[in-house]
Length: 144
Image (cartoon, rainbow, N blue to C red; front, side, top):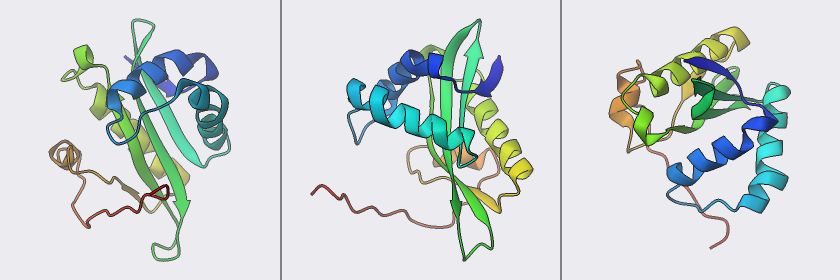
């Protein structure tokens, strides 16, 4: 398995994985292609995000997206994991863990203060990767 930076040519594979991952929002292909995917790729190129894919036998089987956020309270940047997904047949083979370990390594290299992840569904998974529970995560949907 190879963990590498996401490229423009990964759009179809990432979109396919995204449609399986998203539960609270339904991605629209046109918006994905024209706005969100290029924007996230740009943020990654500029150092404001980590956007990595896992590739097995020349096929993208998972991805992770984390955004780098400047903070005052932490005295530096935090890297917040927003999306991690692995194709269903690949789950349980260490792909998700490898993606997270790669993000953790990138956080160290960038000098981030911490890596955070808002989740309830996967808290047990993240605990196995040395994450500690620290807060509840609330949201306010702008469009409602």
